[in-house]
Image (tube, rainbow, N blue to C red; front, side):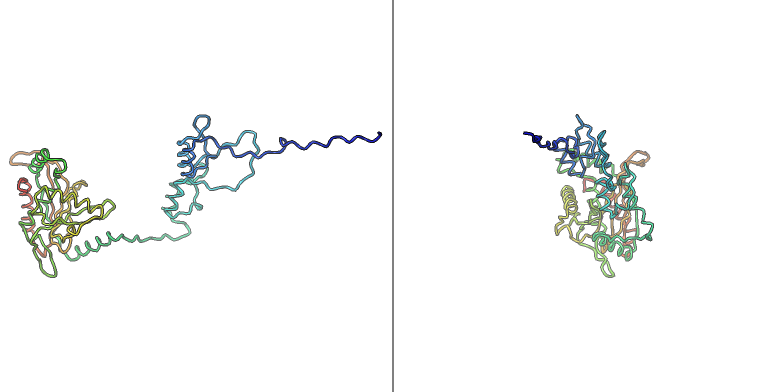
Length: 361
């Protein structure tokens, strides 16, 4: 016929001709590395992989968490992305630190890579007050233990007229005797030098009763037994002074066991009722901290406190000869209402005498 022939319908555009949105390129990473990245808040698309084939390693994640990950380089020939609003960069540690210190990170200028905020930026902001506000001071409320210590020591210095006496004691005989004793003892039964000092102090307090007791009201009441207070420093700060009852009556090995257990209970908040027996005299030993001597504050209503410093090897004359000897400095803090210097001197002399005869302890 003479009619025109209708051609085939036009082909539909191929799917290949449509523009395709490429997903973000994520470098390969093992499941443990991905888990670490999630824990540290690190975006894997911003991390350069340094492993085989560009894989991200644990070191890459840890470095990105510390320093802020570098932006992933744009592929060559790819179309430039539309500009996005600038995002403040801050390392996870700096963000956590800002929260703890109450610093607003949005007000900070970063000094790290790409102006990222680092820990020192947060510290600097904490130390420098905002220029628009007047400097303010904050009062830190002492914890309850510190408040109790402050009240007791303030009362002591306000009410008790302290006097102090110091004596240097040669403990060569005591340390030699102790070394020989420990060499033949089981590990659990070995004695530390502090136990010798405690026992010598307890025996001296028994022999000089004017320093063993309590000042109550307007008079001194001597005690029938020596209940030895032991100052124990706590790991979290502060000090407790539990008691070893009847310390002068205990054999040295039992006193050593009591001391070890008492310190453990004090530092784990598990004191017994017997540990809180009112002490009649207190001993503090800071020798393990390296101090030469201790001038302590008396615990009221007690009337004396004995302080021992570190054992030091120093030149010392024995007769007409000079040698290097182990020496310890003992200091007595006394209450002048209950005793005087002569009484305190007799006490320190007694401590020295017992340490020269350690077998009697």
